[in-house]
Image (cartoon, rainbow, N blue to C red; front, side, top):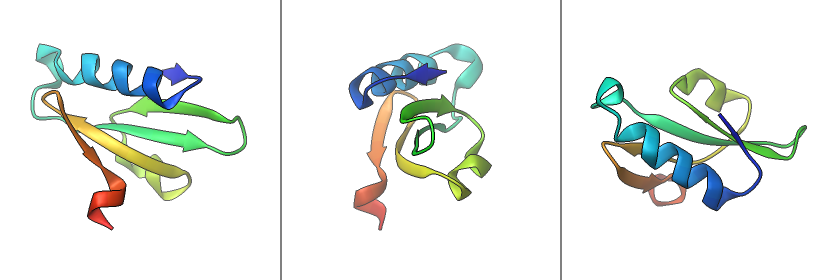
Length: 68
């Protein structure tokens, strides 16, 4: 999913993380410098190429800044 702001991305990620099909699955929020957009995805490998802001698991947000 694609979002223009971090708040919009957080809302999308939280909603997706609360869906039954994503129980106990990490939903990543990534910022792409090339497109200047935020992306919400379950694929953590894309974190290697872009800037990660945080992630949701079962509706609970964790900031990457807290983990570094």
